[in-house]
Image (cartoon, rainbow, N blue to C red; front, top):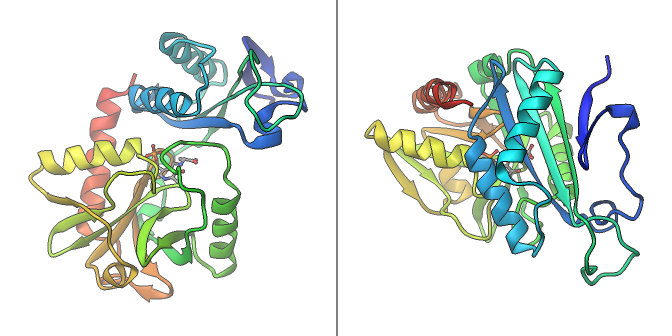
Length: 284
Ligand code: PDD
């Protein structure tokens, strides 16, 4: 069955949805995106994703073709039309179509595309019980990782390097410090303290990260937002990642060596439960 997708004002079967070959998203990766998870037909952290989208657009001097209320309406309409119980909504806004020129075009209408991905049982992923394996790679991305752009080739290369090494993902290293995973934020736990890189241009300001750190503090867990090295990660008691599509996911192996006991850690599993419980309650 074909999906119904949203493109520039219309809901269409996916095979009828088109974007210009001159679209700057296609030619320059001149676009931004968001991924919002859906559980039981409801959106998690919608406001956080909408706020980050507005920030990403602003940093690139782009305007949104829709208001936040319209965006929510489109998300909901797609979830309903595609009968999504558990899954994701992907949203992309690009600067639009214009004759190829490095300078931003004047007056191009931005393009907007949304589609759903059904992921039945998204919150019950067996990976959470097993934990995931990561490898470390050099972080060779551009310097504005706080903007959620669609230039994802280096993260794709990292994911492929991980797959070839028999792992699930790659943690990226810059100047000896872990920045983040290819599509998630990275954490370690040492002596009861949760450590994750501070915000800056070097990482994406994860919406799941913000929620998880808030819940951790509310549960009286100790949180330290600072850079950590690969050596510290290898020596940690636990490690985990967060993202909209994985929630909180334990990491049990780094570069072939077990983290802590080599099993998913208690802190990660507890935070996963809290995040899922609280987010389901607040879902809209
Ligand atoms: N990725 N860091 C990077 C580089 C990411 O691409 C993502 C999200 C995150 C986590 O952000 P959030 O908690 O807001 O999802 C961190 C999405 C899920 C993706 O590209 O599919």
